[in-house]
Length: 612
Ligand SMILES: *[C@@H]1O[C@H](CO)[C@@H](O)[C@H](O)[C@H]1NC(C)=O
Ligand SMILES: *[C@@H]1O[C@H](CO)[C@@H](O)[C@H](O)[C@H]1NC(C)=O
Ligand SMILES: *[C@@H]1O[C@H](CO)[C@@H](O)[C@H](O)[C@H]1NC(C)=O
Ligand SMILES: *[C@@H]1O[C@H](CO)[C@@H](O)[C@H](O)[C@H]1NC(C)=O
Ligand SMILES: *[C@@H]1O[C@H](CO)[C@@H](O)[C@H](O)[C@H]1NC(C)=O
Ligand SMILES: *[C@@H]1O[C@H](CO)[C@@H](O)[C@H](O)[C@H]1NC(C)=O
Ligand SMILES: *[C@@H]1O[C@H](CO)[C@@H](O)[C@H](O)[C@H]1NC(C)=O
Ligand SMILES: *[C@@H]1O[C@H](CO)[C@@H](O)[C@H](O)[C@H]1NC(C)=O
Ligand SMILES: *[C@@H]1O[C@H](CO)[C@@H](O)[C@H](O)[C@H]1NC(C)=O
Ligand SMILES: *[C@@H]1O[C@H](CO)[C@@H](O)[C@H](O)[C@H]1NC(C)=O
Ligand SMILES: *[C@@H]1O[C@H](CO)[C@@H](O)[C@H](O)[C@H]1NC(C)=O
Ligand SMILES: *[C@@H]1O[C@H](CO)[C@@H](O)[C@H](O)[C@H]1NC(C)=O
Image 1: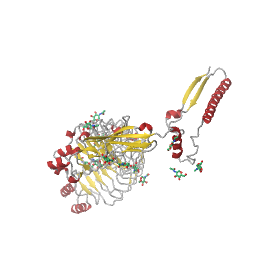
Image 2: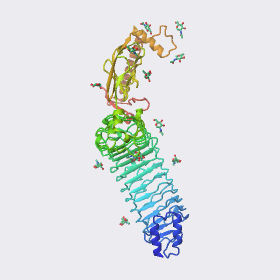
Image 3: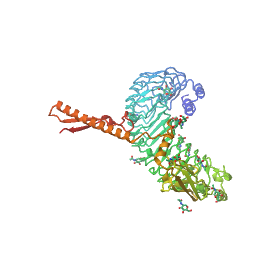
Image 4: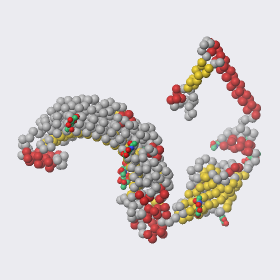
């Protein structure tokens, strides 16, 4: 009979989780002489007692003292008392998950020196008092996730020197006390997820000197502070996932870390966190998927010299600029599917030949000569499960890369030199103060980039702001032309295939006396109710200026004299032996007079003056 039992149990190890199978087992082995609580399944060989999903309100009687593995999950236990486990010093694994435990008495697990694994997952614990985990020196795995814990107290894990895995997620955690993780010298992996934390618990984490992997998921933290991760000398993998309100990573946030893998995914990040990634020369894996990042600019990643995999899937990437991956000699995997890229040029890469995996599907790719290098490698590069396709030109739209025939390549995948539509010599004449518009419409594949050179050889691009702008269609616009804008402007339209130029001269007609017209312009623009045609001036005549200057001087002199008088009187009153004066002043903050934010400014400054 015992034989039958252990045989069946051996077999059942994988199956007995299902209550039905368990029930059958109990029936088969009924009458077994082995001590086993009723309705539970016991294995003599592994010394395991499984009382899973039995609606038990208390810990059942009859558990053999030599039990090593005890599964009490999914029952109706409400409390753990100090004497509950006194008789099982050999217990190594205890599963109390899925009960309705709301309180654990300190010392409840005191006798369990050999315990390796303890799960209190999915209960209703609000607070774990000090002393609950004391004596659990051999514990390597502890799961207290999915409870109602609001705060982790100082020293609550103090004795768990051998703990390697700790699950505390899915609680109502609002605060982690600064020394809560003190003593967790062996902890290697920590997951903090679905909590109500609003800041990274920097101080608490700084006790985890051997932490290798830190996962921070589903948090509503909106700001990361500089030096957020201190003293985590061994940390190699950091995951920040599903922080919907995080929109930037300040430059020094990751300072002090030596990561090999970094995930910042599903956040509100809108620009590439290149500054924060500096000083991570050992980084090999970077995953920035599902953010709102739009550009990767040239040279941004040049310090990540060991980067092998970059994943930036499902973002809003519109451009990976030339030399973006400069310095990345080992880049093997680039995963940029589901973005808005129209191309990916060869000069983006430091060494295009090391690229083995390129996921670029689900992008509006323009198949012209810029993509030729990828198409030529289409049989050696791995494109993943869904092949990239061209969205233009028309003739090859929707055709998967791998199905391209050589003849198609040379026919469609081409570029044409820019050609500027406007007549080669044109002159634009405007009145001073008027808007000047200089056109330069260029055709070509890929769409040419237009820049302008001013008569003074200043480069004007669509990134220029202010009075002079260049629109995306190539038009140069000067909002209100000035005399000094006169001259010949050069338009340069260029793409990979070549360039075309156009000269346009701009003549700005002077409108006579600058002063009178300026005045007029001023009153008009500010929509003064005053009459523009009347004798409206700026309201400054010579007399006024003289009077106000004089007034200013008098006031200033008066104040100075008054001060000296005061000092004089004061020094007399103070006696002759003390002639040092401390003058304290608080410098005005640059940004805003009332909100003095630097500590130095708050402290004020002292001056020491010697009276003669
Ligand atoms: C538990 O830890 C003690 C020392 O703290 C050690 O002597 C003992 O062998 C360990 N037991 C197990 C099962 O690892
Ligand atoms: C934590 O957040 C959840 C969801 O936002 C909320 O229901 C719960 O009341 C919060 N708990 C605490 C302790 O603030
Ligand atoms: C993400 O950023 C955008 C723009 O900065 C803002 O409008 C939006 O509310 C942010 N989303 C969240 C969840 O904070
Ligand atoms: C950083 O990590 C790498 C790889 O884990 C290791 O080789 C290197 O020595 C570490 N550097 C420092 C300064 O700890
Ligand atoms: C990158 O992160 C996303 C989102 O968390 C995840 O789905 C994906 O598997 C990650 N990619 C890799 C290669 O780890
Ligand atoms: C590319 O990214 C997707 C989503 O992040 C991920 O599931 C996939 O595993 C990645 N592919 C490779 C080859 O890393
Ligand atoms: C360009 O010049 C041609 C004649 O050389 C003229 O017919 C045409 O109207 C001009 N176009 C523009 C836009 O000025
Ligand atoms: C160019 O774009 C600007 C602003 O979008 C527009 O005002 C102008 O009419 C356009 N010019 C041409 C030639 O299309
Ligand atoms: C324009 O193209 C010519 C050759 O067609 C080339 O010599 C020249 O360097 C190019 N200029 C610019 C600014 O690209
Ligand atoms: C001022 O500008 C107007 C047009 O706005 C012009 O008619 C007038 O002659 C200018 N005044 C002088 C003094 O030149
Ligand atoms: C200028 O003032 C008039 C009447 O006072 C008003 O109708 C008009 O909207 C104003 N224009 C601007 C640009 O403020
Ligand atoms: C402008 O001035 C003229 C003459 O000085 C006057 O007749 C007219 O009513 C004034 N208009 C306004 C809006 O003040």
